[in-house]
Length: 158
Image (cartoon, rainbow, N blue to C red; front, side):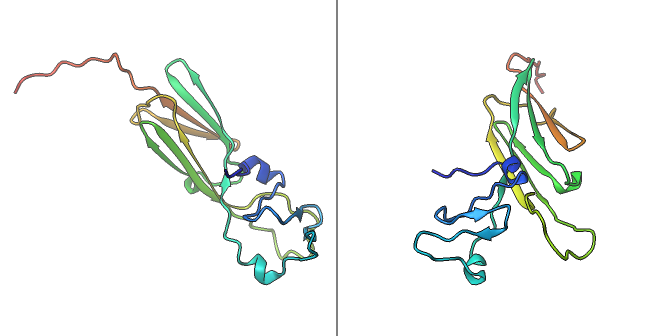
């Protein structure tokens, strides 16, 4: 069972490695020595595959719609991909670190930079044609209207 760190946990400095036996001191930016007095050198560090962050979300129902909210601060709207089906929503993107000038010394490095994604199985079917997405001050809100199972239509015979 994998315990992925949420996007928020990564934004605040939590780091998870593929091999959970190694520890990383976020404040010092150094690897801690393992019990066997082994350390990870640059060659071994490069073998870790790029980790994809997982967005934290709030999801609730209001009237006849599912509302999903997540923080996407620092990301252009055009850099966020949202994919919908009747029973699932996926949000993907990437935060790029663009420092102002050449970095001489790093004092803290706690924000998460890189790719993120989240796929959620919805508890009820939604009408993908009526779905909307809004972003304001870094908060992405999806309004996903539920399928109206009582809706009726008359068909004409051709």
